[in-house]
Image 1 (cartoon, helix red, strand yellow):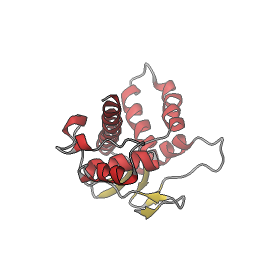
Image 2 (cartoon, rainbow, N blue to C red):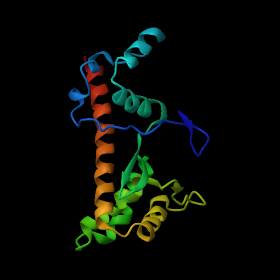
Image 3 (tube, rainbow, N blue to C red):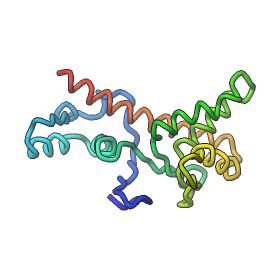
Image 4 (tube, rainbow, N blue to C red):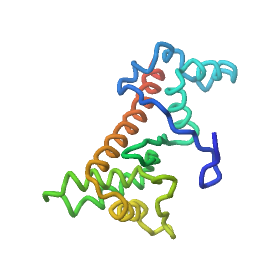
Length: 180
């Protein structure tokens, strides 16, 4: 772990993508359920039974509350992080003017990338100056000025969807384990 921009711990990005189906995480994933009533030794063993990538995602969600990934596209490094509720809601507000237009889909991809993207080649995205400032809107403007290729946007959009699927897979897996 390293220290993040807010001086909190940040997991290093995963190097491999996980399958979308939570049952395909790995052979030992069935041992991964962590019951809060078990003692610390049992919890530690359950977490270590996960394969490395699934453990990283599980820890990211339970400790940090989000997943992050760094990917390389066209020779540039992009740092992505799953968004908070407010950022997800902000997507709809930003996208509303494009509903029913020819730009519906390209703008949705662009807004989604703005929701997840936090740095390009180590240069951080602009952060809001105050609580009433639109964070995703500021990143959207930054991306429009920084990335001109719709192909790069599409590839980033696909990485955003993959990151979201990994988050969903971990939550679904834990949910299934809690039912047994």
